[in-house]
Length: 243
Image (tube, rainbow, N blue to C red; front, side, top):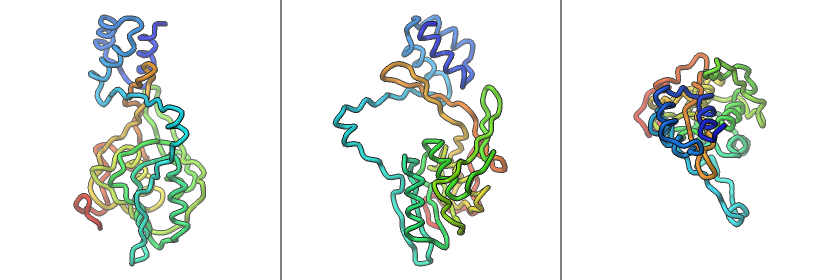
């Protein structure tokens, strides 16, 4: 099979390609023209985009350091522990677990207002810190039907306490799913403003050595919650204002 057609097949497993787009790609792109095909898909498929692959040299790899997922941890006078989770880095669950163990809270305030999402599986590990393992906590709706996704056994269960989750327009994707999971399965209150409403997974399809095509794939559901058009908070406050 030609490289162009392999790319089209890989994309079609996750997203519906209009027949007219497929015909245009076959007409305009040579059999080996994966980049040509990817460009046309990125221009035509909503939310699709090209992503450049980073190729670090040996020195960069040797000196690489893990970027923290928590940008701040603060103990407030009311004994609430404020944890600002800006990203789902490789050690996100361990960072949260260690922060809670170091300063056991009566109430945890998890700030997701600046979290635009990220790695889906790392998010699931963070959620399980608060919920424990949960079968069927998430449902993915794809071209081949629905599938249930569990929350895994946590690194460690970090205890039972009140949880407030701060959300806003900058809360997106996996961060929205985390907020929904914590409200549904850990009794958290959502405080702030409606979230972005990105309720789908993004899949990366290899194009060539230097490029990947990011395409919207499965829709994400948290049974009992509404992610489409954004999560609605339990307590509304102006964006970026502390409750």
